[in-house]
Image (cartoon, rainbow, N blue to C red):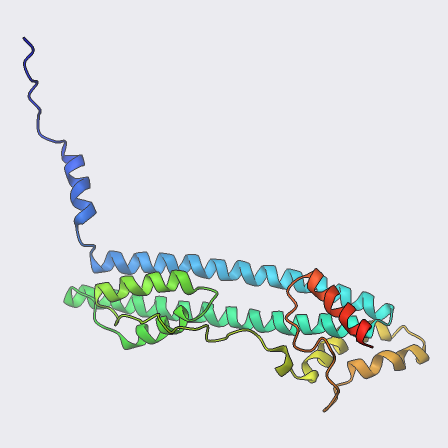
Length: 240
Protein backbone atom coordinates (compact mmCIF):
# COMPACT_ATOMS: atom_id res chain seq x y z
CA UNK A 1 0.00 0.00 0.00
CA UNK A 2 1.33 3.35 -1.11
CA UNK A 3 1.54 5.93 1.56
CA UNK A 4 1.32 9.64 0.87
CA UNK A 5 4.62 11.39 0.82
CA UNK A 6 4.81 14.14 3.38
CA UNK A 7 5.45 17.54 1.83
CA UNK A 8 8.07 19.67 3.45
CA UNK A 9 7.83 23.41 3.92
CA UNK A 10 8.05 25.63 0.83
CA UNK A 11 11.52 26.84 -0.02
CA UNK A 12 12.08 30.29 1.47
CA UNK A 13 12.93 31.75 -1.94
CA UNK A 14 9.55 30.69 -3.36
CA UNK A 15 7.67 32.07 -0.39
CA UNK A 16 9.50 35.36 -0.68
CA UNK A 17 8.67 35.50 -4.39
CA UNK A 18 4.93 35.25 -3.69
CA UNK A 19 5.19 37.90 -1.01
CA UNK A 20 6.99 40.25 -3.38
CA UNK A 21 4.08 40.08 -5.82
CA UNK A 22 1.69 41.55 -3.26
CA UNK A 23 4.07 43.70 -1.29
CA UNK A 24 3.65 47.43 -1.74
CA UNK A 25 6.69 49.01 -3.37
CA UNK A 26 8.80 51.35 -1.33
CA UNK A 27 8.56 55.05 -2.37
CA UNK A 28 12.26 55.20 -3.21
CA UNK A 29 11.90 52.16 -5.49
CA UNK A 30 8.96 53.78 -7.28
CA UNK A 31 10.91 56.98 -7.84
CA UNK A 32 13.88 55.08 -9.28
CA UNK A 33 11.59 53.11 -11.60
CA UNK A 34 10.00 56.32 -12.86
CA UNK A 35 13.36 57.92 -13.45
CA UNK A 36 14.51 54.86 -15.40
CA UNK A 37 11.40 55.04 -17.59
CA UNK A 38 11.93 58.75 -18.15
CA UNK A 39 15.53 58.19 -19.24
CA UNK A 40 14.31 55.54 -21.69
CA UNK A 41 11.76 57.97 -23.14
CA UNK A 42 14.39 60.69 -23.44
CA UNK A 43 16.64 58.35 -25.40
CA UNK A 44 13.69 57.63 -27.69
CA UNK A 45 13.20 61.36 -28.24
CA UNK A 46 16.88 61.70 -29.14
CA UNK A 47 16.46 58.95 -31.76
CA UNK A 48 13.45 60.74 -33.25
CA UNK A 49 15.39 63.99 -33.48
CA UNK A 50 18.30 62.24 -35.21
CA UNK A 51 15.95 60.54 -37.70
CA UNK A 52 14.15 63.77 -38.59
CA UNK A 53 17.44 65.65 -38.94
CA UNK A 54 18.79 62.93 -41.24
CA UNK A 55 15.63 63.04 -43.38
CA UNK A 56 15.83 66.83 -43.60
CA UNK A 57 19.28 66.60 -45.16
CA UNK A 58 17.76 64.53 -47.96
CA UNK A 59 15.03 67.14 -48.51
CA UNK A 60 17.65 69.88 -48.57
CA UNK A 61 19.48 68.06 -51.34
CA UNK A 62 16.20 67.74 -53.26
CA UNK A 63 15.63 71.50 -53.00
CA UNK A 64 19.09 72.16 -54.43
CA UNK A 65 18.38 69.75 -57.29
CA UNK A 66 15.09 71.51 -57.97
CA UNK A 67 16.88 74.88 -58.02
CA UNK A 68 19.20 73.62 -60.74
CA UNK A 69 16.11 72.66 -62.79
CA UNK A 70 14.39 75.96 -61.91
CA UNK A 71 11.50 73.93 -60.45
CA UNK A 72 10.25 76.65 -58.14
CA UNK A 73 6.95 74.99 -57.21
CA UNK A 74 8.67 71.86 -55.97
CA UNK A 75 11.19 73.94 -54.06
CA UNK A 76 8.43 75.68 -52.12
CA UNK A 77 6.60 72.42 -51.35
CA UNK A 78 9.80 70.85 -50.04
CA UNK A 79 10.69 73.98 -48.05
CA UNK A 80 7.31 73.78 -46.29
CA UNK A 81 8.16 70.21 -45.30
CA UNK A 82 11.38 71.45 -43.69
CA UNK A 83 9.46 74.15 -41.82
CA UNK A 84 7.15 71.47 -40.43
CA UNK A 85 9.97 69.07 -39.52
CA UNK A 86 11.92 71.79 -37.70
CA UNK A 87 8.87 72.65 -35.63
CA UNK A 88 8.52 68.95 -34.79
CA UNK A 89 12.15 68.84 -33.65
CA UNK A 90 11.57 71.94 -31.51
CA UNK A 91 8.60 70.23 -29.83
CA UNK A 92 10.66 67.10 -29.22
CA UNK A 93 13.32 69.20 -27.49
CA UNK A 94 10.54 70.69 -25.34
CA UNK A 95 9.35 67.18 -24.46
CA UNK A 96 12.85 66.14 -23.45
CA UNK A 97 13.31 69.24 -21.31
CA UNK A 98 9.94 68.64 -19.62
CA UNK A 99 10.81 65.02 -18.83
CA UNK A 100 14.21 66.05 -17.49
CA UNK A 101 12.42 68.55 -15.25
CA UNK A 102 10.18 65.77 -13.90
CA UNK A 103 13.22 63.59 -13.23
CA UNK A 104 14.85 66.39 -11.23
CA UNK A 105 11.65 66.84 -9.20
CA UNK A 106 11.67 63.12 -8.48
CA UNK A 107 15.24 63.42 -7.20
CA UNK A 108 13.97 66.04 -4.75
CA UNK A 109 11.24 63.59 -3.71
CA UNK A 110 13.93 61.04 -2.83
CA UNK A 111 15.31 63.50 -0.31
CA UNK A 112 11.80 63.90 1.11
CA UNK A 113 11.39 60.14 1.40
CA UNK A 114 14.63 59.88 3.36
CA UNK A 115 13.47 62.51 5.85
CA UNK A 116 9.74 61.73 6.29
CA UNK A 117 9.50 58.19 4.90
CA UNK A 118 6.90 58.86 2.18
CA UNK A 119 6.24 60.83 -0.98
CA UNK A 120 4.67 64.27 -0.64
CA UNK A 121 1.99 65.47 -3.04
CA UNK A 122 3.50 67.78 -5.65
CA UNK A 123 1.55 70.25 -7.79
CA UNK A 124 4.71 70.89 -9.83
CA UNK A 125 4.98 67.24 -10.85
CA UNK A 126 1.23 67.19 -11.58
CA UNK A 127 1.52 70.21 -13.87
CA UNK A 128 4.50 68.74 -15.75
CA UNK A 129 2.88 65.32 -16.15
CA UNK A 130 -0.35 66.93 -17.31
CA UNK A 131 1.52 68.55 -20.19
CA UNK A 132 3.34 65.35 -21.08
CA UNK A 133 0.17 63.23 -21.08
CA UNK A 134 -1.34 65.65 -23.60
CA UNK A 135 1.56 65.32 -26.01
CA UNK A 136 1.10 62.69 -28.70
CA UNK A 137 4.81 61.83 -28.89
CA UNK A 138 4.99 60.45 -25.32
CA UNK A 139 1.32 60.28 -24.34
CA UNK A 140 0.88 56.55 -23.65
CA UNK A 141 3.94 56.03 -21.44
CA UNK A 142 3.38 59.27 -19.53
CA UNK A 143 -0.29 58.44 -18.87
CA UNK A 144 0.69 55.10 -17.43
CA UNK A 145 3.33 56.72 -15.25
CA UNK A 146 0.88 59.40 -14.07
CA UNK A 147 -1.52 56.66 -12.91
CA UNK A 148 1.27 55.10 -10.86
CA UNK A 149 2.14 58.48 -9.39
CA UNK A 150 -1.49 59.13 -8.49
CA UNK A 151 -1.77 55.73 -6.84
CA UNK A 152 1.34 56.45 -4.77
CA UNK A 153 -0.08 59.80 -3.61
CA UNK A 154 2.53 61.93 -5.41
CA UNK A 155 -0.01 63.68 -7.65
CA UNK A 156 -3.76 63.97 -8.11
CA UNK A 157 -5.29 61.70 -10.72
CA UNK A 158 -5.21 63.19 -14.22
CA UNK A 159 -8.53 62.99 -16.06
CA UNK A 160 -7.87 61.72 -19.58
CA UNK A 161 -11.40 61.89 -20.99
CA UNK A 162 -11.03 65.21 -22.76
CA UNK A 163 -7.28 65.29 -23.22
CA UNK A 164 -6.07 66.47 -26.59
CA UNK A 165 -2.68 66.92 -28.09
CA UNK A 166 -1.59 70.36 -26.90
CA UNK A 167 0.19 70.94 -30.21
CA UNK A 168 -2.40 69.39 -32.50
CA UNK A 169 -1.76 69.05 -36.23
CA UNK A 170 0.43 71.62 -37.85
CA UNK A 171 -1.61 74.04 -39.92
CA UNK A 172 0.62 74.90 -42.84
CA UNK A 173 -1.76 77.68 -43.86
CA UNK A 174 -0.55 79.49 -40.77
CA UNK A 175 3.10 79.26 -41.79
CA UNK A 176 4.58 82.56 -42.82
CA UNK A 177 6.08 82.88 -46.26
CA UNK A 178 9.14 84.36 -44.56
CA UNK A 179 9.99 80.95 -43.05
CA UNK A 180 9.79 79.23 -46.42
CA UNK A 181 11.72 81.99 -48.16
CA UNK A 182 14.43 81.89 -45.50
CA UNK A 183 14.99 78.17 -46.10
CA UNK A 184 15.08 78.68 -49.86
CA UNK A 185 17.58 81.52 -49.41
CA UNK A 186 19.77 79.23 -47.28
CA UNK A 187 19.72 76.33 -49.72
CA UNK A 188 19.03 77.65 -53.21
CA UNK A 189 21.23 80.70 -52.65
CA UNK A 190 24.33 78.52 -52.91
CA UNK A 191 23.21 77.29 -56.32
CA UNK A 192 22.15 80.64 -57.73
CA UNK A 193 25.63 82.09 -57.24
CA UNK A 194 26.89 80.01 -60.15
CA UNK A 195 23.90 80.65 -62.43
CA UNK A 196 23.85 83.17 -65.28
CA UNK A 197 22.34 86.54 -64.42
CA UNK A 198 19.14 85.80 -66.35
CA UNK A 199 18.56 82.60 -64.39
CA UNK A 200 19.39 84.23 -61.05
CA UNK A 201 16.46 86.58 -61.50
CA UNK A 202 14.15 83.60 -61.86
CA UNK A 203 15.24 82.08 -58.56
CA UNK A 204 15.91 85.14 -56.43
CA UNK A 205 12.22 86.16 -56.04
CA UNK A 206 11.61 82.82 -54.36
CA UNK A 207 14.53 83.23 -51.98
CA UNK A 208 13.80 86.86 -51.12
CA UNK A 209 11.34 87.25 -48.21
CA UNK A 210 8.10 88.99 -49.13
CA UNK A 211 5.54 90.57 -46.88
CA UNK A 212 2.62 89.31 -48.94
CA UNK A 213 2.47 86.64 -51.57
CA UNK A 214 -0.44 84.69 -53.11
CA UNK A 215 -1.02 81.34 -51.49
CA UNK A 216 -0.19 78.33 -53.66
CA UNK A 217 -2.52 75.41 -54.14
CA UNK A 218 -0.24 73.25 -51.99
CA UNK A 219 -0.60 75.64 -49.05
CA UNK A 220 -2.00 73.76 -46.08
CA UNK A 221 -1.22 70.28 -47.45
CA UNK A 222 0.33 68.14 -44.69
CA UNK A 223 3.25 66.52 -46.50
CA UNK A 224 4.51 63.43 -44.74
CA UNK A 225 6.18 61.34 -47.40
CA UNK A 226 7.54 61.41 -50.94
CA UNK A 227 4.30 60.22 -52.57
CA UNK A 228 2.31 62.96 -50.86
CA UNK A 229 4.83 65.54 -52.02
CA UNK A 230 4.58 64.38 -55.61
CA UNK A 231 0.77 64.40 -55.49
CA UNK A 232 0.78 67.95 -54.18
CA UNK A 233 3.17 69.08 -56.89
CA UNK A 234 1.01 67.47 -59.60
CA UNK A 235 -2.08 69.20 -58.23
CA UNK A 236 -0.38 72.59 -58.52
CA UNK A 237 0.81 71.92 -62.06
CA UNK A 238 -2.62 70.73 -63.19
CA UNK A 239 -4.28 73.77 -61.69
CA UNK A 240 -1.84 76.20 -63.31
